Amino acid sequence: MDMLGMYPTFYVPAIGTAWVMGIIGVIHVLASHTSVGASFLFALLETKAYRENKPQLLDFVRKYGMFLLVFSYIIGSITGPGIWYAITVASPRGVSGLIHNFVWVWAAEWVYFTVEVIGVYALVYLIGKVDAKTHLKLSWSFALASWATMLLIVGILSFMMWPGHENWYQTGSTNDAFYNINFFAHLGTRTGSMFVMATVVGLMVASRIKDMQLRRSVVRFLTPIGLVGGLFAVMMFLYYLQTLPSNAVVMLNAYLLPSYAQGMVAVFVVATLWLLFAWWQPQHIYTSLAVVLFVFIALVGVWPEERMRESMRKPYVAGQYIYGNQVIARDVPGKGIAGEVDRIAEKGLLKLHPFMPERLRVIDDSNRLEAGRLLTQVACANCHALERGAPLRNIPDKFHGATDEDLIAAYLEGPLKFGMQPYMPRIDLPPEEVRAIAHYLATVNSGQNVDRLIAERRQAAAKVAMQKE
Ligand code: HEC
Image (cartoon, rainbow, N blue to C red; front, side, top):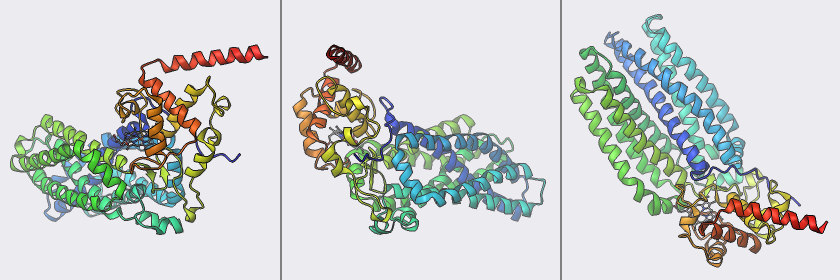
C-alpha cells in the first residue's frame, strides 16, 4: 500500500516541541533583532560623528559592537542552527515544504548573513584604522546586509501564516509565496521593534560610559529612535492583525488576547517610560536598572509575541496546507501535492504511516493501549502535551479528566472528524483508531501508569504467542 510521506514523531513530554522551538526562537529573536537594529544605530551614529566631527561617538560604536560580537552574534549563531534542528524534528514536512518554496531565498539570506558577520568584525576592528569615510560606507553596508537577512526571513515566516491569496496554490511560485498578504505588515512590525531592542540594549552599554558628556549625547541620540521605532512597531502590528486568516482571528480572540494583552500593554508602557526617563536623566541610567528592564522587555514582550504567532497559525504549520500534525490538509496543484485527510479517514494512520511498528498495524485487545498512545502522539502531540497538568494545552485537562471512553470518542467523531474547530486540524480516523485513542486518553485520565500497563500487556501477548507456537 502507498504510504504517506510522514516522518517519525519527535515527542517532548510536557512542553512539546512547540515550546522547545519557542524558547530557542525567543533567544534568537532577541539576539538577531538587537543586532539588526544596532547595525542601523551604528550607521546613523557614525554619520552624525562624521558630519559633526565628533570622533568620540565612535568609542560607543566600538564598545557596543564588541558587546554584540560577544553576546548577540555568538548566541544568534548558536540558536540559528538550533532553530533548524528543532524545526526539522518538530515538523519535518513543514521544513520540507518551506525548502521547496524558498531554497534560493535561504541561499540569498546566507550570503547576506556572511556579509553581516564579516561586517561586524570589520566594523569593530577597523575603527580608527581606516579613514572615516571608508568606515562609514562599511557601517551602512553592514546595516543593509543585516536588514536584508531580516527581510528575507520575514517573507518565509509570513508565508507560514498563509499566502493570503489563491494564486500560490495554483502556481506554486516563490514570488507568490514570498509576497504574501502579511509580508509588509510583518516586516514593519519587526523593523520597528528591532529599533526598540537595539536601544534598550544600547542603554545597557551606554550605562557603562563614564564620560557624562558623551553618555548624554549618545543616549539623547538613541532614545528618540527607540521611541519612534516602538510607535511604528505598534502601528504595523495593528495593521498586521488586519492581514490574518479567520482561524487566527478566532484563536486570537478566544485564547491569546485574554492571556497576553495585559503583558503587551505593560511592555509598551514600561519601555516607553524607560526610554523617556533615559532621555531625561542620562546620568541616572544604572547598569543594573538597564539590565532588569532589558530582561523584562525581552521576556514579557518577545515570548508572547512568538507564542502568539505560532499559536495563531494553528491548525497549520505552513501556508495553510500542512497541518501541525504533519498531515497535508489540501491539494496544492502548483506543487503537485495532494491532500491526505480523506485517505487517512479511509485507510487509517496505522496502515499509512511508514514508521508504525508492524505489531501495531492491526489493533486488538492486547495492543490497543500502545497503539492509542502512538496514534495520539502522531495525531495530537504537535500541539498538545499528553501528561495531566502539563503546560502545552495538555489533552487530559482539555477533556476535564474524563475517564469515559465513549465521551472522548464522541469528541473525536464529532468536532475533530468534521473539522469544526477552526484552530484544530480535521482529524478523521477509522472507528478502531478512534477507540484506541479514546482508550489511551481515558487510561491516562484515570491516573494509571500507562507505561507499566503497556509493558504488561506486551508481555502477556508475547506469552500467548509463544504458547501458540
Ligand atoms: C495543529 C494543532 C492541533 C492538533 C494536531 C490537535 N489540536 Fe486539539 N486543540 C488545538 C488548539 C489550538 C486548541 C485550542 C485550545 C488552546 O489553545 O488552549 C485545541 C483544543 C482542543 C480541545 C479542547 C476543546 C476545544 O474544542 O477547544 C480538545 C479536547 C482537543 N484539542 C483534543 C485534541 C485531540 C484528541 C487531538 C488529536 C486527535 C488534537 N486535539 C489535535 C490544536 C490542535
